[in-house]
Length: 205
Image 1 (cartoon, one colour):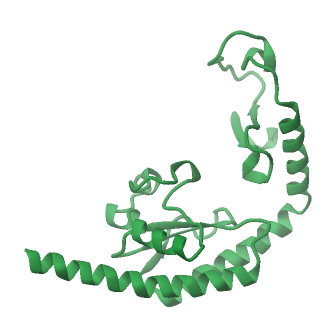
Image 2 (cartoon, rainbow, N blue to C red; image 1 turned 90 degrees about the vertical axis):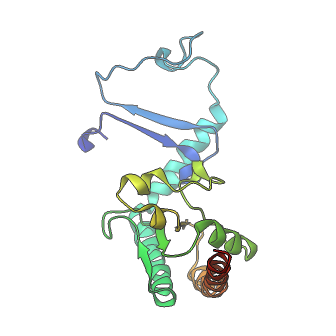
């Protein structure tokens, strides 16, 4: 970590298949940080309370397991991610990929479907058994456009049509092919529904 030049970094165990409720905070030597809770001298006087030892051990085991084949796994997931994007691009040419095309996470694909609502797309995908989101994991359930995409300069129309697909260690090529088929069906249905809705609004006006 010292070679990265980072002053601080936080890690959530469940993001690398560890138990929920455990995390890791890295602080470069000499970086001051004030405690936000008081009452004990645990964890170098930064967070009081009895440590969750089983979760901490589980986090360490998950980190070791994840790092064991990290490079190969990143490459594998990147290939699957790109395969899904190619399929989406073929089905919906108006779709745009959000984020840097090279310097990005191997397991994440964020796509804006111009002219469509992410809320409508997500409901249709959910009915087909596909889990996706319109923003970060901590914003699941929100119908507001991602503030991150807006900060990146995306217009509200594209930010409001964004869908995030995430892959993992257990994602298979067969699942990617299946998701591609489901997206094709969903796009056909949703595009028709949005077009019909637009005509109804126009007629009402």
